[in-house]
Image (cartoon, rainbow, N blue to C red; front, side, top):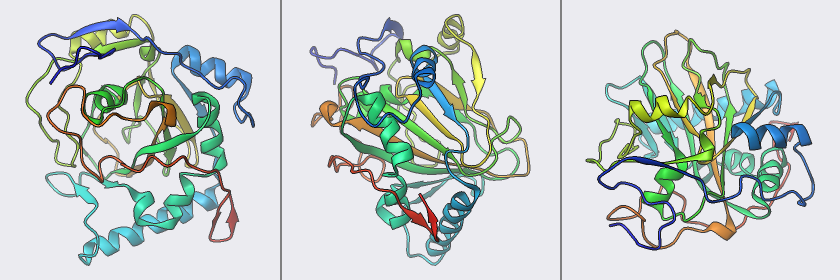
Length: 304
């Protein structure tokens, strides 16, 4: 169902582009300021900023050990949050890891992430969504081009562009192992996708609307195609309207990323989708909108 009070209509009969109607950075006076002025400028201009070495190798190793434990629990039939692609062994996702394990609960609240997100969004935020995404081995599945906001808006009822995607690299991210690809400056343009039958790529994600190849080509006139490469512990912060995707893994090494989606508490979802029949359920989306409190944490003795 489409609504007349919708600032960002989508999933109609036609695809079209329009300028965003919301600011990019809200928190110029928010303290503490974790992002440098040049990083804020980079975020405003290109829609994302990369922070190398945000987390130590020791901390990332602790996170990866905990992921292996969660997978072992799943294999013993104790966990149902893992969603595997078809055929098994390609790409895997664990939804809402912060609700399954204290380590990820703390990680989503670590000041190195949360204070930067607050600085961008201008104050208190809640966690709209969290996910661990793992690409295993050769020819793992690709990640279709999309903006998170279009899906949040259409299917989750998020009204405005006041969200941030935080990606923490848990393994080396390279072009060969399908590093996430970003269309720089695409956050300045809203892509209203054409409605189509809802399809799943097997990992629990419904890619109901994807931009056409023609639209992606048009977006390349505004900015360039950039691969988000980096060492484990690298943090990438993206505007929720930024267009991104990935190719298939062409390396033997897996690629793992923790993906945290933050939304301003002043932009809380309404109780209906803007372009859908029903809201996406948990664990795909977090219904708890409690403002997050920053708290340094420890990973096996490593201080956050």
